[in-house]
Amino acid sequence: MRVESGTFTLTGVVVRNNRGVGVIANGASPTDVQGFVIAGCKFYGNDKGGVQLNSEAFALTGNVFNGNGPNQVVGASTGAVIANNVGCCDPKI
Image (cartoon, rainbow, N blue to C red; front, side, top):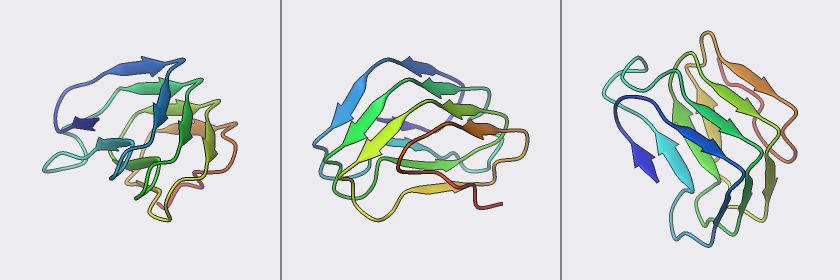
């Protein structure tokens, strides 16, 4: 799933077996995609990582990451809540 502008809510879903990244939230600037929520999801088997988030003011909470590629990136996370995830997501501020 790729989001380049706006906002979204992703809860309680399994994102799996993608040849690329499970979820990418990355507009032209970090403020293009903001105010979104990814909560209670499971990410596994994504070849290039579970998430790549270059956004602001979002919540990434209570997710499980297992068996994904090495490119999980959470950057530009001003105003973000990143908590209680298993297997991923130390913010890179």
